[in-house]
Length: 196
Ligand SMILES: [Zn+2]
Ligand SMILES: [Zn+2]
Image 1 (cartoon, protein in one colour):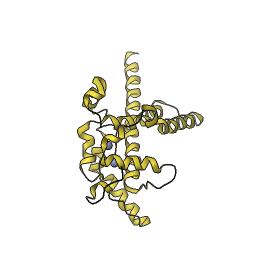
Image 2 (cartoon, helix red, strand yellow):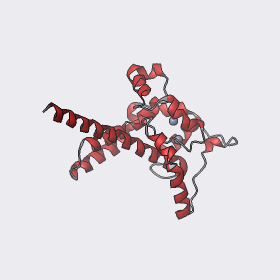
Image 3 (cartoon, helix red, strand yellow):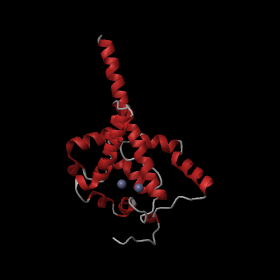
Image 4 (cartoon, helix red, strand yellow):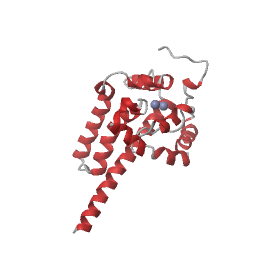
């Protein structure tokens, strides 16, 4: 009886962690698409792409606004996914965890740009475990050509994707199939200065 309870608790925990890592992976795919192929002139999502590119120049610009204004779009998307999972009867610990952590990815990214005093003790402690992405880990995205370490939720998924050259391989496939090349980030062009 005790053994089966522990097994069930372990299985639940694995599903929640799996949801966290899957959400981290999706955050990386979306960030990669914005950074490497996104155009700020696109309708609807253009302003999100512009803000993301802007934060490569001025990382703290990512923190402007309120919790609500930073997250209302992603909250609406999360609610739509939960409704769809409910309608298709696939609501479970993994899918709910993936949606909740996916909705939180914007704020996880923001926390990686705040100082420890701004983040408070709990978030700082979580960042030290790597379950929430640390400043040092996220700096790898900003330090290089903004073409690696796209995942923003944890410290766990980026090393795996970098080791297997996941995004570089995807970019090679996209170029081969469509002829479209990824766009080097404007912030790595020393002659370019954004209109702030
Ligand atoms: Zn950032
Ligand atoms: Zn980026």
